[in-house]
Length: 356
Image (tube, rainbow, N blue to C red; front, top):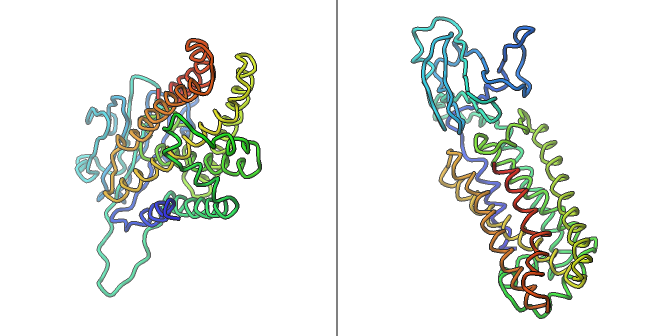
């Protein structure tokens, strides 16, 4: 199973030793409303406030957002920033007691991220302290093992179908002799399991990007979590949404194939799309492993994963057009109109909704 060893590597990398403890200050956010102070719960607000106590004097406050923001301490302007701003808490020594941090933006806040990083004391050489628990790392470790177990089970059930999904040559080949045999099983139970596996894998990748690049994607603000159980609920919820989208796409292909008189291409086209998602997902996982190896913390590379996925899917759609052109005798414009309705326009809408 050499194709899936990257998942095991990805699992081990998430357990990389921590040198600092991370505290998400979002759980302390407050907003000022007509009724006074209130806990932040995704309200439409241009300013958020939270306090930093003396226990964080040795910490570093990290503020992340793609949009410009202004930082105030006890009502006094301290700095203006964009993307990533780091401030030593002990540098605010002129402010006695708890420090009220206020962050203001011109537009309502939705992707702002505030993290307090506290260095850990070096343990005695004879001590063996427990590693600081990180709930998101715990989630990724467990989720990775679950996905590895699922793909091993699918491989044991149907090895040929597994390798067909991973066949990159067929993905970019115009002439495919035995594709109809494999595509004929598109409604089988094992294929539904593959659809579920891809849904869970894509959901895991989305959660990683949401976690590491919250200021790049507006959807990240809709999925905030502070416990392993909370992440698992979001993972399941996103997976269900992705699976429902796949089924909706299948219905879309069926309906437009009847309209354009292309019933024979339904199974082939949808199987080709699932294969594309399968290969793209694995490629993105490999890149995520590289990010963990080099300990990437910047949001840009993780956001790049989604951009790269968009490019791959666009190239895959182009090859699908060439494949259908070789398999059918329809005019070029007729076939292009069909692809616009079933592939191009839905992808443009989905890409605009997620990335912009």
